[in-house]
Image (cartoon, rainbow, N blue to C red):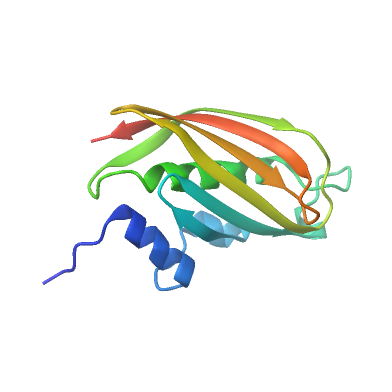
Length: 141
């Protein structure tokens, strides 16, 4: 008989390494570092291979790790059989990044029955704010 595991518990197993990370995490190289109800922390090591033509971290990667943090924070509140999709995403870039550990801290601001709203702060190795993101998500039942 298969064990029934909640969304939050499954994400906790991802943090511990007992559950495999999603393919996009492997492709880009980020990992879920912390998870609790309504909050997720994604970590990413920026390296020269992630640079844009200006020699800084590509904005798409910054946006992707913010989206991942917000999505996992939202998923932590869902029922086992529910799913979700991002329906709107906005990001402001506040400081360029070249290298080092980047942390995206996603939090759920509001989780309604169908629509949710999340925010994310992305910080660099020194803890400085490098980007701020927000997303609207739709729960699919």
